[in-house]
Length: 147
Image 1 (cartoon, rainbow, N blue to C red):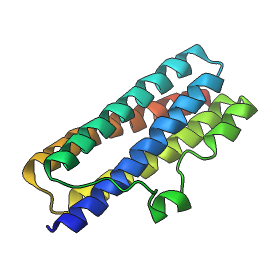
Image 2: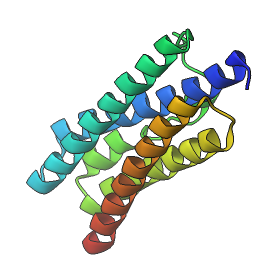
Image 3: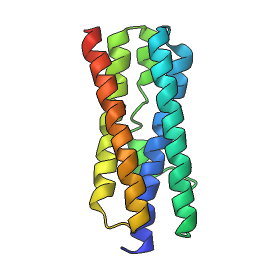
Image 4: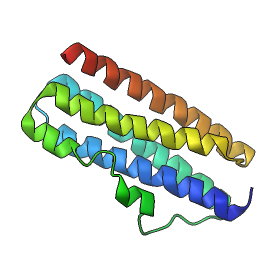
């Protein structure tokens, strides 16, 4: 796979991770339920760690992260409605928005894994994908329990 295509895949993941990290960070400052604060903090830290890993991979592959946000990133900010949901204080709507963001993250990772990526990078993304799936499942379970 050519560098440009690899870079496009990585930029999409970086945008998705930044979005998730920001969404969870903002939500954890506003949400009142202590257990959700802990969960959001865990995933904000996770996404931040994943960002660093991918940036390291890009550095090793001599690729640059795009400074400006990708077109797709601006069209659907996965966590954009999280702030409104948190303001509504409804546990279920907060978790619904989180799950929407997680669905988007899963799709981004699935797309990335379909691409032909250099070996080391592919295994990093596979490992992160498992973490993203766990996050999705935890959020979904919390949401289902809040109904």
